[in-house]
Image (tube, rainbow, N blue to C red):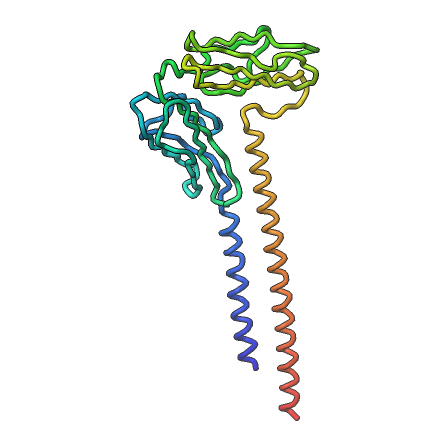
Length: 270
């Protein structure tokens, strides 16, 4: 009987040591769903890739019938799936790159809008964007399409100057009126000379002192990370509940075995 008890204790000790190891392995799984780079046919994309910018409008020459899109994840244990037909048609070809973090929960998507045709005619970029009397956040650049401006008091619209790189492109300013709340989003739509390629810039106008979502999209990503942390905490709680239950059962088994051993000893003495 003593050998049985000692054997059981030895096995239980091994189990208790293994359980924390499995938990450490689970916690170590990364929740990073970002890309480090995107390449088309082995070349860097234009405009330059930024892992926190998820939308790109790209022009490809008419001679291209097929492309290879390479998505390099920031975390080598994350996975990236390219969704879309890489056999190009004339006009706009839309692609989604879906990134799933190592934890299998956190995801993020990047979007490529690739126009096959005359690259200059497919140019839907702005050369300059200004708001009279207000400062853009961040300062206008060739990568960002989301901007923020803060204004004082009450306004009905913004005085916007949007200049396209291609003079023959068309610029439309949408929803730039009736600022009835402390937060208003204006869309600046650029249609390229080819009348096919389009690009939209988002301008978030807010009253000074009021809170607003990060126009770069980082707040949405942080929300995803927070959700992943909550899922991880939930898993941890389940783990501890299971571990506590196992420990309780082990203790009961040991007590039962000790009682049985004592009774057997008493019978043997009699």
